[in-house]
Length: 154
Length: 301
Image 1 (tube, one colour):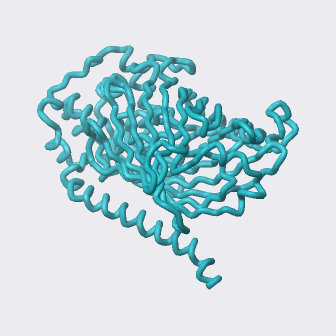
Image 2: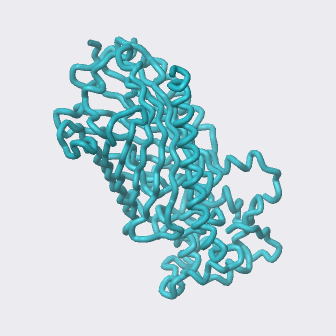
């Protein structure tokens, strides 16, 4: 009886771990089903962008002040994954690539807001929208790099 | 009973030094700017960025009626396992004036983002296992019949009352026009017995500026966020309601030091006679960017 009591916390903890991992697996399976269509590395995420979002214009486009602010925001929020200067890091894609250059500002804004969870790109919806536009203005100011690192994740 | 005036001579000294040491350490670590709202109790839909490790120290102090002053310290280790999954370990302890300093237990929580894209309301599922004793004074949430009486026993009396609890939360969160509005609905069950308990937490906050400054600056308004939160308990499945429950409300502020830690502060005011008068909360957190990269081969910089 005493042995059972001693085992109870362990069993509870193991049960919780199992429950958590099951929940993770459940969310993951739901995510991956949409994830194959959500891959930002193969541009298929673009199909998810509503037309209204795709057509949105950056209110800060080309503004030097916004580009400077965007660089600071990029360094604070994005550089640890995408590298200083957005050149890619540890297999994560460069944001100087052709596919980023070809995306509209509205499409990039949609990706920043929604992320691509299955591919490791978090949502940045808690970052104020003007700051997200400033980051996009900064990305537009970067030179295009044909040899930039491209990875399997956004 | 000991008053707060004698705080410096009592077991508080050790936690205070630990906080100071954490501040010094945090100042030397390169950190990322977190996008988390400044709440202490309420959770939002913001999860830890995948691969990042946030280390935080949450402190709570107060001098409730008919109880000794205390300082509760909670160490949080929060890791972004996936973009949709954050896992977190809490280690908790407290020091009570005229009594003792003790470790009160641990918690392991997991948060799962349910929907793959943003919506007007974003649900997040929260699952937690708690192994804490009755001396715990962290007040990370309020459930069941949590009340001021929980602060009034001595550590010797309460530390033997161990509860192993499963807790679930439904987190609903929105980001309209620069604001964050979050609601948490909490249910908790002591697996060693007892009824299902309920609680709630609601918060609203906003950065002081929504546009980034064009130069590096420490005290720019965008580095500050402010808001308010209210939380409390809703009794049990047998007597659901406000009877014998505690409720708190207070402002919350956070200061994200560029390339440094985030500091948070919140006074919580008790709303009824079952609540403590005022609880003071502080938080120091810092985020180690891409912690998992420390264990990876460098492929490209």
